[in-house]
Amino acid sequence: VQLQASGGGLVQAGGSLSLSCEASGRPFGTYNMGWFRQAPGKEREFVAGINWSGDITYQTDSVKGRFTISRDNAKNTMYLRMISLKPEDTAVYYCAASKKGYITRRLADFDIWGQGTLVTVSS
Image 1 (cartoon, rainbow, N blue to C red):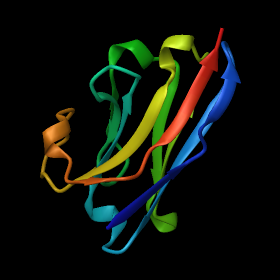
Image 2: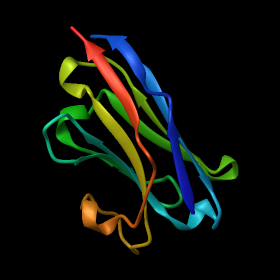
Image 3: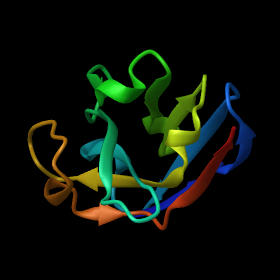
């Protein structure tokens, strides 16, 4: 499967953005999926994950209550709805697919990566 992330941009603090990750190739619904982000000068970190069917989601503590991950397997697309954005959310956001048979937050467990989309939150 190949992944294409989109939807990033510049937004003021307190604003919202929605990211999309469109998949092509092997059936999308066979993968557990995740969003990661990498801020300038920092390591890539887990943001949110969703299992293959979409009925299990999980997020890192810093985005709970603000970010919502979802997917539509019929459209081969995963989403990240972000509200109440903060300057510290500024990063390149990556979508990724995992062939592991369990949900995970570990970067190393994700086999396929999209190219990233930049989110900039101004104060």
